[in-house]
Image (cartoon, rainbow, N blue to C red; front, side, top):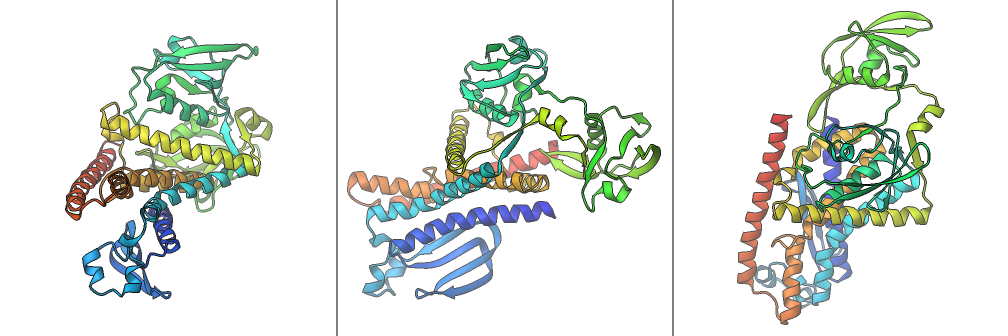
Length: 455
């Protein structure tokens, strides 16, 4: 249920902002807007407002939307239009205005992402310190003899303060298929420089994190399996788990630390298990059934309880980066630009065969990630919303007929030739665009289904 609601909310917000960009700039340019629709198909709600009697629609299929403007279909519109109306037709506007209108949707998506990231950065970004815990055998990191306990400082001279930063930097740099420079600091405060050969890294394997592919395993000190916060209505609460309960055994297996406890819980979705916990010095037997959730296409168990660890211990694990209002805005702009550029590079690498088309995701995968981010909390969901908004903005800028980028391509031809692209050419282009989008949608759905089947 949460996954469905999170998906509808995500697509609803991103599509509404995109179409509102077209809508508002069209009105600023004096174009008459006939319809503003969120969704496709049968209208669930429809009303007309304003002096232009613009029709506002919420339709049944929440996978997109559109803004219909007067003058998009010149022959049918012109037959019933006054001279005053014709002056407000889209096809009667200057080239500059038409360009602004067609770019407004993607720009609105990018502005939304900047706003969302700005809020996140002002709130403070919490991440795990990039301390190397273990090295994967025969990995690029192991081959260069990085040491356990070293802290990663830079990736190709990009400063990193958390494992999230390291992961993002490695993803970007791995696309170049060139050596990656990693700077670390040892426990003795000695600066070290390594060059990792990543030419053989398989970016297509979605089940293995980029950190593992490079060879890094996160340092996780042993945390006692003591229960902290218990989520209301969760399996943990229903089973009677309470804050400060210390888990001793799970299905008669001794539990040494929190990591071992979580590993067992995750491997028992919808399977009854027996816990022995210590409460006020006394052992207590509890029966609990972890709920099933999907995480990166994998079915795992969850009970809805966190660990109870002193703040001093948490400070050793996590780092919080705070930004000023202006600093957060600059960081948000940089993050949005960086993500958009990475998306374009990924698409380019797909076209030339450097990256598999298996990475393309459809609505099923997006819905799954929406649900996961919503489960993780409001900050994770806001970050996911920003990412989807960037993806939609970038996708619509591609020079494919029927997308915003395709229309902009026609306008650029008009700019250089001095005359509009003929209706015959646009008609052919539209058919080609439909075929390209249909292929992309089928491929995305296929990848979604394949992920579900293969887990």
